[in-house]
Structures are given as structure tokens and as C-alpha cells.
Length: 90
Picture 1: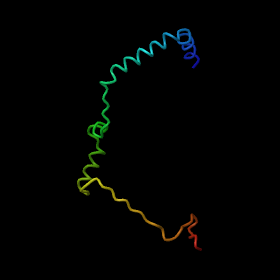
Picture 2: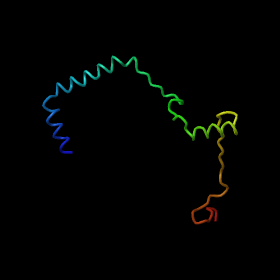
Picture 3: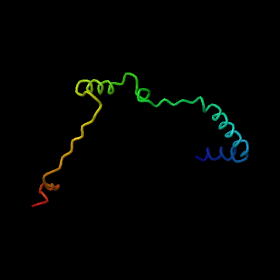
Picture 4: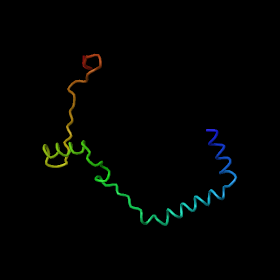
């Protein structure tokens, strides 16, 4: 860590305007090319090729469902059970 600090003290502190100019130049270059930047974050681009888990999911989905709808099942306990095995009503 001391080496990094010494390098920083030797290169960055004595030349703040050069460092700021370099960052400004990088920012300007990034701004010029910003219009050409395209980010594809679709589901297909995020999935690995030949992903076994995805293929298994699709196979099960084809077999057992007709859509990507979800069924959520809830239940309510009849009695409030305590960790010691007794119910709260006792």
C-alpha cells in the first residue's frame, strides 16, 4: 500500500493539470462516440450459449404448461405451533 501511495504522491500530486487534462480528453472522446454506443440487455443476449439449465427449463415448460403464467398457492395454518411441539392454545 505504501508503494501505491508513493507512486501516487510522485506522479499525481505534482501534475494535477496534466491529470485533469487527460481525464477531460477521455471524457471528450467518450462523448464523441456516445451516439454509437448500443447496449443489448435482452434476455437472449444475457443467456449463455448451450445453457443446460435454460434448456431443461424450456423442456419442462413445454411439457407441463401452455404459457409462462404462474400459479401462487398460499395456505393458513389451523393452529399456531410453537418450537417445543405444543400449540399456542394449550
